[in-house]
Image 1 (cartoon, rainbow, N blue to C red):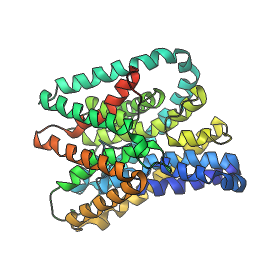
Image 2 (spheres, rainbow, N blue to C red; image 1 turned 180 degrees about the horizontal axis):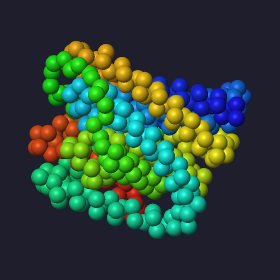
Image 3 (cartoon, rainbow, N blue to C red; image 1 turned 180 degrees about the vertical axis):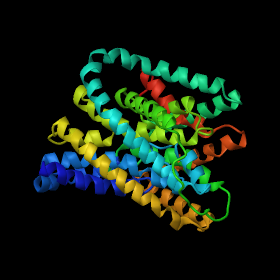
Image 4 (tube, rainbow, N blue to C red; image 1 turned 120 degrees about the horizontal axis):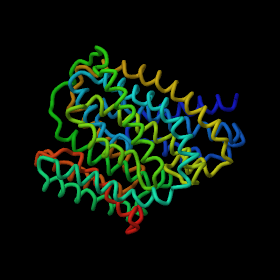
Amino acid sequence: MIEILIGTLLGVVLGTVSGILPGIHANTLAGVLISLQVVLLAAIGPLALGVALFAALITHTFVDSIPSTFLGIPDADTALAVLPAHALCLEGNGEEAVRIAALGSACAIVLAVPLSILCYLILPAIQPALDWGIGLLIVAVIGYMIVTSEAPGWALAIFTCSGILGIFTFSYGYLGWHSISGESALLMPLLSGLFGISVLATASQGRVPAQKYQGISLESKSVAKGSVIGTAAGIAVGWLPGLSNATANGVLASVIGYTKERRMYILATSAANTANAFIGLAALFALSRMRNGVMVALSSIPMPSPTGLFVAGVLAACAAYVITIGLSTSAQRLSGVDSKWLNRAVIVFVVAISMILTGPFGMFILLLAALLGLVPPLVNVPRMYCMGAIMVPVILYSFGIAGA
């Protein structure tokens, strides 16, 4: 138990750091820890190291709502959620947005842990049928979204163009620098360009409005609905191959309007993010499939028991919730800050991180993604359709047409 507590504490600290810094994912920290595994295994042992990796991932799913909300830069797991969250911040409700996200992640813990155990016991027997149906499911969802949009032609065009960009990014991913965080590092410039820099570059000028917190404006019924839908989406994309939280964001957008029901969408995507982490662990033990960089790192060391990791994940979630709520209260310090210079500083930071993690190829992807991200508001189409960058490669992967 001592090793579990030590590993959990270390993971919470690392996950808080990765969550606060825009562009840094728990996968990046996992790569750093594994590069030092010889030293760490000798110092704290395999149980504590494995626990630290998983605790960092869980903590990150809570804390990553802070840069998404206050800086407008998406994590790979919060691509679409950044839009309503940052919009609430610009209305002076940034702390509320972060608290809603934390609440969604906390609710997911209650649902995701038992569901992950259930999936571990039941789903492996029918896995081949599940794998085959992924592409059809996504085609049906995105087809419905495009047909029901206000401008189907433009929606299809943007979805297709972003899909081509996604295929290009993943097909030539070996051109990027990814010695630390793996090829998934290219998701950072891809999604930051589509949903981050393109938004900040055209954001209105002025000073950040005074941040105030007057409670969470969500009814209990909406909290329950968003938690259940979000957790279900997170469980689905975490278990099925080729999918990610970014895919869950897009699917949830077809169920919950992220412009009309902003608060519930934030809650649902946060629930999906955290649920995905737990089901990813179940998939690792049940199917030996690695859904993210942390699972890859776990598979490279003597793995602790799933029971110990689940316990550590729940402990980390409790600590992460308290930390996230505490950090959200610092929102008042942004009041009166010149948004023009803040946006420029964030853009410079993201460009620098993209260069460090992915090199010149990542910078090229960032530029293309940012230019494409400027198009949707010009033609009055939601940026949601830029999720083709993730969905199209997944569809092709499911049909065996291309790797993802």
